[in-house]
Image: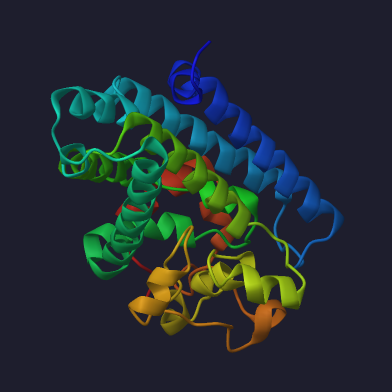
Length: 273
């Protein structure tokens, strides 16, 4: 009988697809039944283009990186490279430590993509979505996705997390991104307690405000502690969850960048005056 970690390694793709589509359907249903904000643009039009971008990104990653992040981790594990491979830790503890460290990496990378102009040109594809729902969490330019994968692989080589830890981390990251970008609002008391540890939709929605000082806050995707530690935490938007404007002010016709073509060429367009 296979152990759970061996089973996970053998069924990585199936497990990841199960969680991706399962969480996507769950959050989409929740949004449909009880949305937090009224959407201003066609959900069907945005969804089919945002998900088309996900397909393009997945195809590019498969072509450029036939050995995925978990494969790199497995290779480092077998050769004994990386920080965590220097210690004899129980699997559960090593997975826990690796997930925490990788989550911090995502926080730091996110800050970097906001602060460096050439990286912001790519990342603003994510922020240019004029509405905010579960598909916004997967809307990233292909070049940003490639750079993110390269950064992740370098981190795996340096840290030496197990392949199981990388798979668990990627499932949690993708699930968190869909959850905290969803157009829902948790009850106030529930939100208050959940955000002690995890990023909630109301917390991350502030990050998508058109006001730059709000955009430059709440960078975390999974754990909320990094924003508090590094003083980038902003609990609420100035205009409230229903009053805040989503997207980028420099886009005169935000619906024009909802198309797949619009998203792909956005980083190379000159900003409007």
